[in-house]
Amino acid sequence: RGTMLRNLGIRIQNLQPGQIIMDIDFRWGGDPSIILAVDARVASLPIQLKDLQVFTVVRVVFQLSEEIPCISAVVVALLAEPEPKIQYTLKAVGGSLTAIPGLSDMIDDTVNSIVNDMLQWPHRLVVPLGVNVDTSELELKPEGKLSVTVVKATSLKNKELIGKSDPYVTLYVRPMFKVKTKVIDDNLNPEWNETFELIVEDKETQSVIFETYMKGN
Image 1 (cartoon, rainbow, N blue to C red):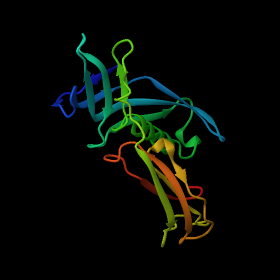
Image 2 (image 1 turned 180 degrees about the vertical axis):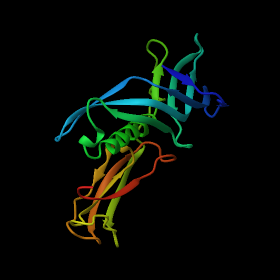
Image 3 (image 1 turned 30 degrees about the vertical axis):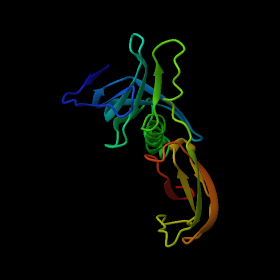
Image 4 (image 1 turned 90 degrees about the vertical axis):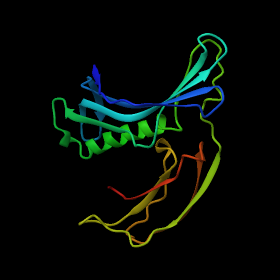
């Protein structure tokens, strides 16, 4: 169950022939019953997700048709700007969140990755409204491959008080398709010289994200 919050706005556009585009300010708050089953090496723990609130702009694209009901398909996506906000509270069922180190961060990363990868524009859900409806033109398709070489990093900061600095880099266009370099042991000025190919589906809106980590962090 949930409550649709007030002060909604709707913007209507007609950017493509045969389409109507609506950008809807979407705000939702509720207390759904969502139980996550988390299995890790140290413990298995059911996690309850409570007090869910969603603040985002939903883009709805209506593909028009000459046949009744005059709409052949609907496309649904979340706009990247303003960035979608999903707020919730995590509660361990019959245990403590501290039983699995880093659990809250892991769940946050998973939720954000799923939202960004599957629903954030240009990614979208395409729903045909009829039998034998061709939605191929509405689907997101690869436009090409981007070749990226990770050469080196300099003057990295060691955030660990104890232990070595073993850096590596992850990079991606879509969060669900991350690639990473090899780990360079005990070096704050690492050199990788590794090349990766990333699929690009919309060169106007997508970008490459680079993240540097230390092994074990």
